[in-house]
Length: 179
Image 1 (cartoon, helix red, strand yellow):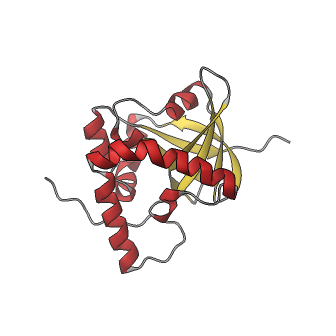
Image 2 (cartoon, rainbow, N blue to C red; image 1 turned 30 degrees about the vertical axis):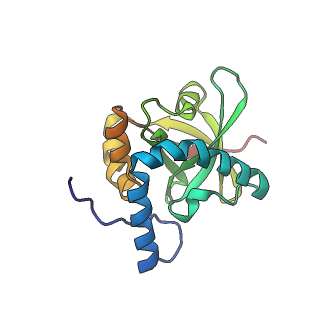
C-alpha cells in the first residue's frame, strides 16, 4: 500500500495543533475504510440535515474534521429543493468552494452532482450564512490542478478507486443574490 503524505488540516481559520493533526489523520484513515463506506451514507447525511434544521446550518458532524457546507440543489426529476451535506475546500481568494462527488466511494455519483448538472444554480449554507452559487463542473485539467489539495483534505483517491468511477468535482461560485 503506498504511503500517504501527512494530512494537512484544511484552511478553516482554526489553529493547527498536534492533537488536531492526529485526529485528522485518524479520521482520514477511518473514512477510507469499507465499514465507513457502508455505515456513513446511512447515518451522516440524515444527522447533518437534522442538525442544519436545528442550528440554522451552523453545525455539521463532519465540520470537526473538514470544512463542510449544506448544499441545496433543485432535484432534476422532482424540481423540489434537495439538501446534501458536503465536505468542501473553501477558496478564500474567490469566495468559491470546491466540492467532490465522492458518494463515500459508492459506485454511483451522488444525486446532488446530477442536480447541479441539470440546474447549476444552488444555495450553500456555510457556517450559518446562505450564499447563492453556480455549480461549475471542472474540466479534466482543472480537476488535476486541484486534486492533490482535495486529497490532502480527505481520502478521495481511496473513494475513487473503490467506486471504479471518476468523482465529479465542482467549483461552487458565488453569484449576486436576487433582489
